[in-house]
Image (cartoon, rainbow, N blue to C red):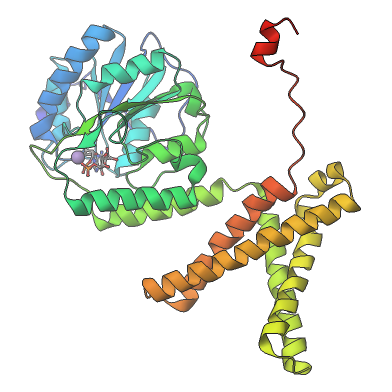
Length: 412
Ligand code: GDD
Ligand code: MN
């Protein structure tokens, strides 16, 4: 163990123990620290000194004595953690966690937040690609009431210094995939890939976070209680020292993370809707077999009758079970007929969407037919669920009792 790590008989006062167990941030901040800024590091010894100096200069100006910097290092071969301890002798706000077992960027950030004492938790890359000076603008947004303040490459004044076209395309592609799978999460910010943001501890305390790979921000938005989001534009700089640790594995982990978060955030009704959908597949197959296989009908009329019978089956179960509570409030008879008409229209559009998606994947991207069909069914099920939830079973909104401003002014 390096000499700087252990003082005579004791241990360096800046050393932080590594939390274990669930990745859950406690509700209670300790003491007068307002901001805890976590700096995840892996082989960043050539960037850290400049970063700590620039961060300290900014924060001594806007948060003197009320902030802490937490380096969370995964036992870097270049001993970034040892350098951080030496720097801690010069920068009293600096604390250092050296992880040996657990690895990975996003768990490093959360372990840092678990050991943090601040009311506001933040993260910044160690490699100077995130300009340290932006911290002050993020802090100002939090001070003005945001629950989450994100440094975004796609907000006003933001950008990427000479990123390769491939890297830009990959980043945008990842964002598009996120928008398809998790529109209510990824769609809330212009740069969901950002690893530079601040979040109120109260917005994520008690939520068990289970990120994968690099993208901690979508985990915070997906599982936190985030009401107000502010964005600050910044230019993502080129690295001047060290290497990016992004590999193909980071992209695979990102897709797995999106799917896992999507499943975790599905409303309970969705599982019922999907089970009803499966029963519809069985009805569709049985009617098709009966009409085409036993009665010798031509294929298309058989398929149309089978599909309609399956839709009727699905509507009935959804009206009785999946959305039974909403159907009861809306009433039966003509109201149910109206719901059935809407359900048919939405599912017919879903069928067209499914055929179009299948054609595009197989025809354009040469994807395997059955893989493409599974993707088409997944996307169409999502379409059918959300559209029916919004249009077929939504309850009429109570008329707004608020008096319009101009009538209020006229003393209505
Ligand atoms: N502790 C720890 N463990 N830190 C890590 C690990 C790890 O396994 N992997 C990377 N880091 C640290 C790096 O030392 C750096 O400080 C930061 O995480 C970002 O890593 P890079 O390898 O530089 O990633 P990048 O430059 O490609 O940045 C991309 O990912 C970042 C993190 O989400 C971009 O999308 C950035 O916008 C984003 O901030
Ligand atoms: Mn980087």
